Length: 172
Image (cartoon, rainbow, N blue to C red; front, side, top):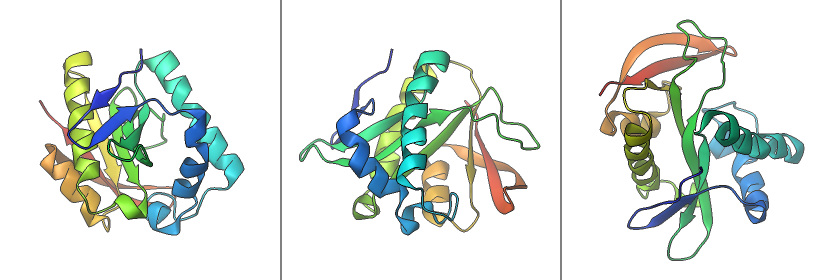
């Protein structure tokens, strides 16, 4: 079952069809994707990505959730865990791979940490002992700071789709 988590400022919930236009805006913004793919997503690619979230929850019991500002009800980003079966060495398969992305207007406000802190707490309770990982571009210092504050530490460096990445792991 997809959880609904609330923090002081956020509601973290399943994506809903009315989120899609804001979701497209998120993933078509060059500032958002510069450390992820480097290429903005088309509406079609965003739709496939959007629908993928439901599949993660259905088949794996975890996934990404929409982040909503509690005060305004506005979609401000997404965060959660996935298992992308990435072609990486060392492999992250079977782990809860953490990730987050925020609208540029929501960045720098602590929303990413706040959302992920709630999600990590949920995952620790729901999947006790399960490995938690993240991949982050070494130039993405804001995300590295969030990961570090959440207890993630680097354990390797590799390349993914031709881009350098740092592999992080959170030990309990």
